[in-house]
Amino acid sequence: MATVIIPTPLRKFTDNESRLSTPAANVAEALQDLAIRFPNLKKHLLDDQGQIRGFLNIFVGDADIRDLALEQTPISADAVLSIVPAIAGGRQ
Amino acid sequence: MLYLDPHIRQLMLEDAMQAFPDECCGFFYGEEINDKRYIKSMLIVENAQIGDKRRRFEISPKDYLRAEEYAEEQGLQLLGVYHSHPNSPAFPSEQDRQAAQPFFSYIIMSIYERGRNNLLSWRLNDQFQFESEEVLEASAIA
Image (cartoon, rainbow over all chains, first blue to last red; front, side, top):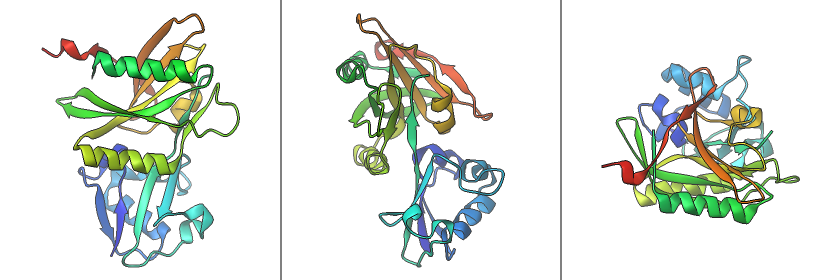
């Protein structure tokens, strides 16, 4: 099973678990799996259209899925998928 | 409620003054006990924004992951993010709100050319809106 690393701000929705296992075969399935297991997490992962929320980066190993096959990026049983919040902002 | 050590507050303000007129950014760490957050450590991070850093900041994914690792190494919780608003009030902008994460405290420092400054903290509520968070000196813990 692949491992998903949950960032600190989202752990309150995963019973404080920082690492979860998933049988998913690709990134989209992994996020759906998490959304089903932790319903309160869903709105912080996916928007109303079911797309990955803006200001959220997903890495498989060291690679950003934007440089791979986006949500269809396959994940092997020993893969590590990291959910990484995009930290940004600034004055008006 | 945030309890901020005066030394850490000073280090954050110095980072903001050093970066001026650009925005600075970083993380802070500590413990949360009964909804009270005690800040014990901080980490200065490079503003990775490409372009105008006077009104935007960005932290690279690599620095974010390093910040999470630092929390584990130190046995502390990553409690939030700080950044500065040069020549602008310490209130969150729409850009700040859109990028904000749940749980994190967002410390914003306003820094002005003549040395005037202010530090406020904000947290996102369940409706994705910012609410003010009281900041007290750590010496007020007792």
